[in-house]
Image (cartoon, rainbow, N blue to C red; front, side, top):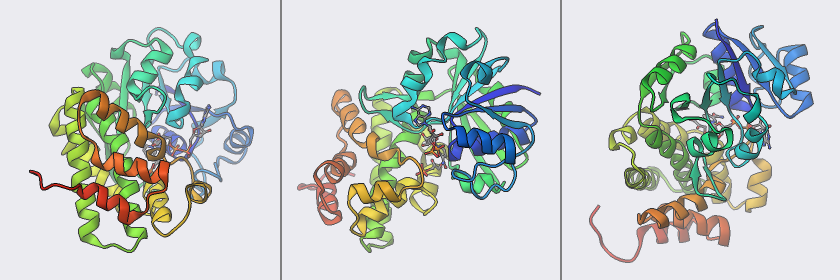
Length: 332
Ligand SMILES: NC(=O)C1=CN([C@@H]2O[C@H](COP(=O)(O)OP(=O)(O)OC[C@H]3O[C@@H](n4cnc5c(N)ncnc54)[C@H](O)[C@@H]3O)[C@@H](O)[C@H]2O)C=CC1
Ligand SMILES: O=C(CO)COP(=O)(O)O
């Protein structure tokens, strides 16, 4: 049994806490919401974020106290909305023990810096990269919460760290694979959300399979090109964390990003779609960061650019697709 802290008791943090408990670990959740901490400790529930979990395992408890959360934890898992990760983690820096491994579940790019979450987490905590792992894959939280079979990828530049984290989160219904491609994993998880916004938008506007497939395929090409320019391996984009997560996210109303786009497509404003969202739609702030990253890496990002014009200038779905088509015929 391993003591594991999970920072952030949102939909995925809480569900992953259940996975970790089902894998035999003792789990301490840390959250900033007193009502969430109370509900987990008193009722073994998180009704706002994981309403379909009737009872969390007894091994899952919660605290508002940072030091208490990470004390004695050999693994610290971070599941905080990506744009808030840096500020939230800074207070944990003096509290981590020298051998603690840190795992990011987050799928986003920091808008202020265009940095991936592996960069944000290691910088904020002053963590050597061999003590960092990222977990990403087709893991819609409601399905994992129902203990439906799913798989994920644990990536670390240290094979030992990847294996240790994979062993810690292996449950009968949750199968981790390992990888050394941290950059690829981060790019897959973050960029599929931008594609899911666009696919959702096309569905909301009433377009069918051809349009959705076109956006998904172009999104995959864009994320692969950007990832390779950033140092990722192309094969990661063809795996669970790439195509796998793209397919799951772009096909499901359980995805906040897909649903956000769908609501825009059927005519909601950004404010209305934000109000309607059940939790963070990471693709929204990440879209501009992807455009920035593309600019600095010299990689065209037509899909992210078109989506940024939707989000920043109110472009509608037809205009977004016009931009995506571009003016000239080019090689695929
Ligand atoms: N829900 C899902 O199906 C999956 C989500 N993810 C990723 O996991 C991350 C978290 O997602 P969810 O838990 O689903 O989102 P959520 O919206 O349900 O929860 C976000 C969490 O961030 C916390 N937070 C926000 N600002 C904070 C701050 N300043 N300090 C401390 N905590 C703060 C909130 O309290 C909340 O616990 C995201 O990056 C998401 O892309 C990854 C795989 C699956
Ligand atoms: O990443 C996810 C599934 O793998 C969850 O997607 P959303 O953040 O869009 O809900």
